Length: 150
Length: 150
DNA sequence: CTCGGTGCAAAGCTTTTGCATCCGC
DNA sequence: GCGGATGCAAAAGCTTTGCACCGAG
Image (cartoon, rainbow over all chains, first blue to last red):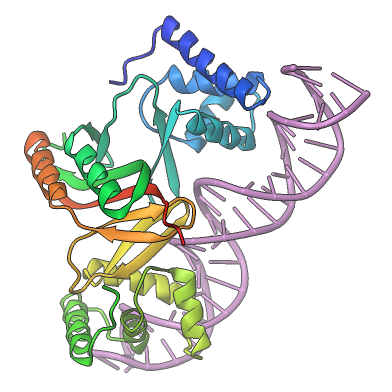
């Protein structure tokens, strides 16, 4: 699930981002691609600060502003997903080649479990029909205690 | 749904809060009950700042710190629900006597629609069984465009 | 009388913004 | 070379904390 991407996949992902930037007439700066690569060469959920620190530790010259800006672009281009797990903290995760899933968050240890359930799509369809809206995305979190917490 | 509470209901709610405070050996201060009453005499979703401003406008002497502190207690005692609709902003709503519901948020006009669907309980049950966890709460939001937006 | 709760202001944290500089195109 | 993008630092916005005072028990 958090398996590292292959070189081929990384190329594909970079191509998608390149296409997105060209469509939007945005510049293909080295920072943008460095951030994309940093995200895709390590898995899991991460916040802006740790991504920023990671890149700083590799002596990469980036600013927080650029990290925030680039994350917005990556979310826009569907390469990264943004989550609002807690108050005042956005967490992100890779979105390419990942099937739709939702999250269980342990309220004791903050561990995150991913799960899938087709019924969420049924609920979405019901909502669209019943309220005449067009659903763009959803977020579903279960806050739980994971008993086998060790 | 956002109908005002009756006096009887308000009494009942205050009694619940009183019981909660006594159980936890907390003091029954006038500020805490004033905040509770303010919340229950007006409906809908609200943020901390507007609640604070409302009370200030009524010449009630409260501080933001007390509002935050009291909201924590009210959430703890299940009289108020906290939502994380957007980044960096908690919204709250009354929880007493309201049946479980989730939310559709219009990404154009920020309008909030409430809906119920029993399938969310089925998903919850599945999650508990499949992952051996004990779900305490959940949050489900659909981000959508409400076409009949006028 | 005690000490938990309050108001106020300062501090904290994440995120955004302003501005001079840099560099993709 | 132009104008978008960047780095840096300052500012903004929500929330928490520190501290002296107040008042519930």
